[in-house]
Image (cartoon, rainbow, N blue to C red):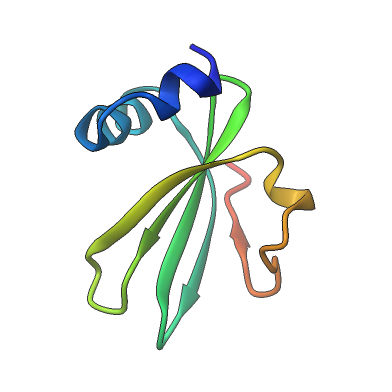
Length: 80
């Protein structure tokens, strides 16, 4: 699957694709803004954002998370 095919999926399909085929990479928690989780999926990165109450806000594709404008300070990396 390409990132363009993934972007064209509906929200529930995106969530299911992450659940089944995604590899958890990192999580960043913020007390006021919630958390972000990063997954690798078919050669691209997907970010899932949650509000402070744990509700999903959005899912988006990121070209290269480690080169994006997103700060990595405080990110917990899963090395398993």
